Image (cartoon, rainbow, N blue to C red; front, side, top):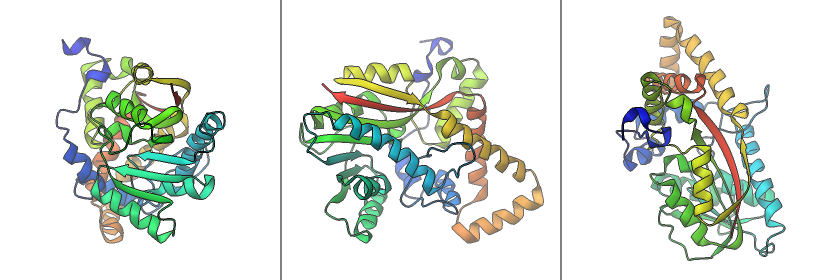
Length: 314
């Protein structure tokens, strides 16, 4: 296919490897320095989503992480109340990260949670967090690949995946697996980054900016809203609701990128903060700068959206 005729969904990260994702979330990859940087304000050892904030609210802070989790959970449980499995309170957390969302689901919504994650560090950290909160085994974690979940067919009434699908090499296969482990009538919700076709493919420059965005986030490719809607249906789900919430997270994130880049333009301040950041968190500010710059280039053009989806297994 001629590159000029490709949809954004078919523009891939040319260097992506699953080890990049493991490296990012195990602090063995320069891109992980962003999480060390953000740990000054938020609990990055528990929460990894970009959050949900109204203008003027804290963002990239625990409160914004929890707003996003609550929005997904409230929609999930509203559908669950009318499902044939309303008395079943077991939730599967696919690519559970460091367990913050699962722990919150138990503490706020009284759900029992099984979380799986492909990265050993995440599974270890999530287990440690659950143990410290004294909620094991009501909340438990293990290793698992979203493309081949180590779980039986029709074994859960509820499932979610929060922002992790962006890192999956095959999103339709992930959706098929979510459908396989859910009971008929079970409810599924997920949040993910989306690409906007006409912006990402508008020019060679835009395609390059989009690929750089994929590289700094260690993402193989992104789905569009339309391609996700098709894949959800093909996986045997009835999509009940979807939302684009970019104005509540990515747009606010880009505002923060602009402020960061402006402050970084003062060489003396950059050098001073670089030394401080290394001492405070261990992060290399140069790596953070490259991450923020590539993100800003894509976000200011409006080529990345953020979507929430709620569906019922047919």
